[in-house]
Length: 91
Image 1 (tube, rainbow, N blue to C red):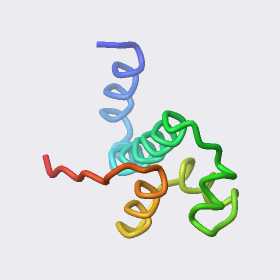
Image 2 (image 1 turned 180 degrees about the vertical axis):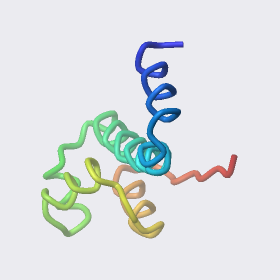
Image 3 (image 1 turned 180 degrees about the horizontal axis):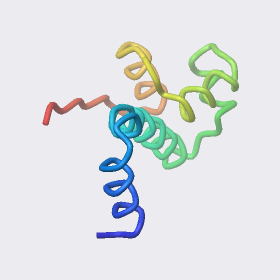
Image 4 (image 1 turned 30 degrees about the vertical axis):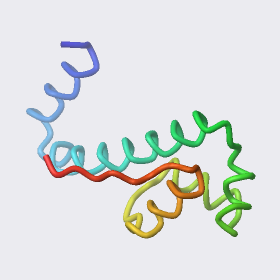
């Protein structure tokens, strides 16, 4: 187990408030990271993606850095603009 995982486990055990919000916050963070990685692997800048989606670069940045309450339709548009398909999995 990595040091980060050990820290998180220990902190969750000691701090109920941290534990309550950590999992949902982490999932939102992962979504933003995955979107950024998909954009970068497609070789597209935030500006270019914004142009394709008819929005502003700041909107793309906000999605990649704070993907909370993002709509499924937005995720689909994001993926389509990158020439990719959205795949969801319930685990």
